[in-house]
Length: 402
Image (cartoon, rainbow, N blue to C red; front, top):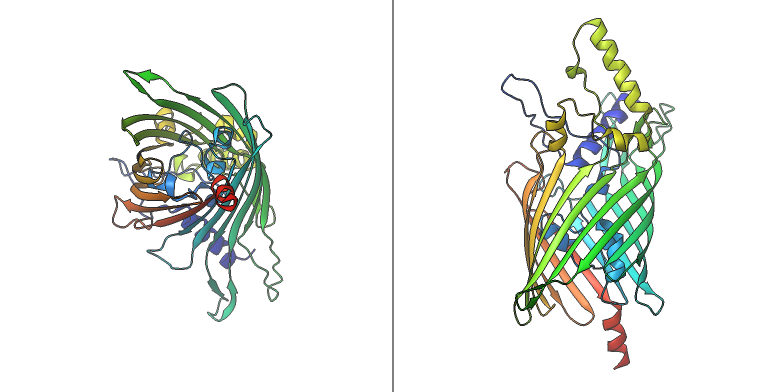
């Protein structure tokens, strides 16, 4: 891979992560901006409007067609026999107008016991059209890089209140191209991954009201590395640990309010930085050894290493945790208003934004929309829109029966 292409790939990955270009420094002038680096970063983008409007959370909310991304085990508690959802997100629209994420997800309840479900989803992230040129500035190719993932999941109730689920995923990242003039042949990177999740749901009585309390967890994208540049640049998948809880209580007849909290941490070791080592020969050799260990580390070892490897110790490990808090009001499960907030430490990416959204549901169709309002005016995520259209199979069956 020539230097031009390598720079292109690095730029694409940076855009996909949506990390601000301004680096944060401490009082001593040391650069503390040190986000966790992964491949296939588009897997971290929330696909659906409902969850995005509550600050990118969903591991313990009521199950819906898009639970495959947040917590597949929720499908076992789904109210409908089946549903299919199509989501569309124009991404980084403040910078370009042709990057988007499209997501198709759905599930179907199995058997007559209403305790298990089969689910699937397809994600397609297009990075738009990119024109390349040779060293003399002459245009050579027009590229359409993309990343995609297809997965299949199964969930089952293990008791009346608890379920678990698994999902298996194939991932493909096509960020390269073939340059016949330079004899440079590149190909996309692929990987396999799996999710494992759990969901607990109960209905406590508080006062005279029956409330709903649920919590969930999901470890996603446990799998092989992806290898860019013909295997010379291996990258970890964005393995995630997500924990969350939701409490729903009635405000009045047909009026309900749900409050949710999600915590998320990337289970990926931090890549060593040369600036964290001394400039003498011994320090530089230590950096090269640490970098080689990071590159050769297996993904499973990286999961355990991710809890203890931050250069700043426990303080920096805490910085790697992102927080989402959100609320959802619904009237008779037909009209929805949502709001939330997402926080990421300034040294780990500095993504901080509010989410707003609304939804309308009929017997067959449900339409959700969300709007992202970044707290930093220069954020490329500001004014991001998402749209989700859901088809309910039970409603469709009733409509056809009439």
